[in-house]
Length: 139
Image (cartoon, rainbow, N blue to C red; front, side, top):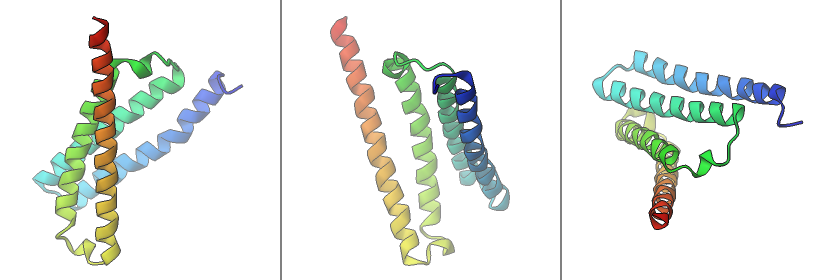
């Protein structure tokens, strides 16, 4: 039942508004507070979000477990995540001295997000490295 096309389309209909809202919010922030670093941050984050959406879109329509162990796919994900990390780092360095971070929990939340994202990025790089190592052992 969950493998049928209606369920897959329903899944896409469910996740599409989330990704659309994220991109609209980033573009809106760029329109309100335009700057060169904001443009770079927004572009990197939008590319990362669209890359993640494209991967989920593909995996929902054509589930393929072999794809999940493919080194080129994970290198692409790592490249997208690198762009997202750069964009998020720019955002964090712009956010910390701003008036929006006056509340003490804003700083705590921002640093918790940064810590979690850094650890997720390290796990991703470790996974890509282990796939690369496994592939080169076979050769």
